[in-house]
Length: 396
Image 1 (cartoon, rainbow, N blue to C red):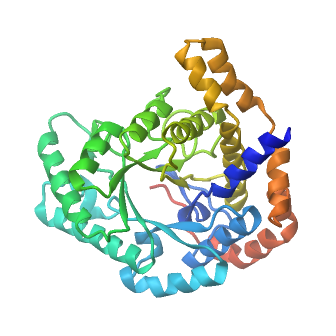
Image 2 (cartoon, rainbow, N blue to C red):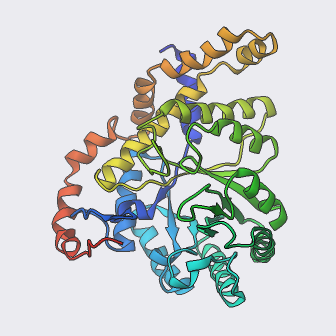
């Protein structure tokens, strides 16, 4: 690879950071159950330890997304302990993710529940999440709602929309000036007839109704098959409403597979749209990148390292698209040249340049091999195997 291209990759990697999900290190499963892994994290401290290992080896994952119900069981009182974990393991708290779908009270929804007492409980939960984020110096509160219905005629969709607007506005009023509210969407599951926030347009309208510190969060698995996600990205960028990503891959529905395992070209195209927007606008897009994956069969830490290294590669490839030439080709309707600029960048082997960048930072050139040689997996397997052996594996 020639020097100018390597320099572009080096410059891009200096800015690229991607957040790790705490729950990605724990035993997770599907609607049908879960397969227990002997090395899976069983406590919040173990999640921080594992995330610290990934960051130590890759250098680009300094923050950990926290799930309030699972990581902050004592609410705001949990923050002192979490700060100790952050100091001990070299990674800091990232986005705060409330849980408004697991408790039995949310059987018929949270913000969209017909029962005003349950809507109030959900609102108090969001307010507590904002307070937790403030105590931990976390900027983003990521909101995903399972609210919806399974059968026609069983829910007043317009009324539920109004309840969401009211609750999100009140939640927005709790934010500090430097905090953001990210609203996520999903077309189906667990609700199968209608979901209250089913697509990016609904999330956009609700974010605007909530207030100026609300943006849209895109989960790459939360779309119908073959949907053009990069077009959604382009539109949200043009409206200054794209706040963040939850990256994963999918084959059928919200599969939460390892990033790039099914369609790496799609993630490349998403990164390209962001980089092209930055080139045209002359400003850096303020987007939070995060991994949101469920590894039932793959090793937890290995799959995170695999994802992070893939993310770096796809981001680096997107940097190699010649934006000036592309703009000219688009203006002249030169279809072959425009498409070829993307295809050639995607086909470029950027791994040598990334390895050079890692070496310049004192990082291992091959993070996966370094992890395998570290002995960390063997140690935590010995320490956690007995605890994981007692995990309940019944169907849910």
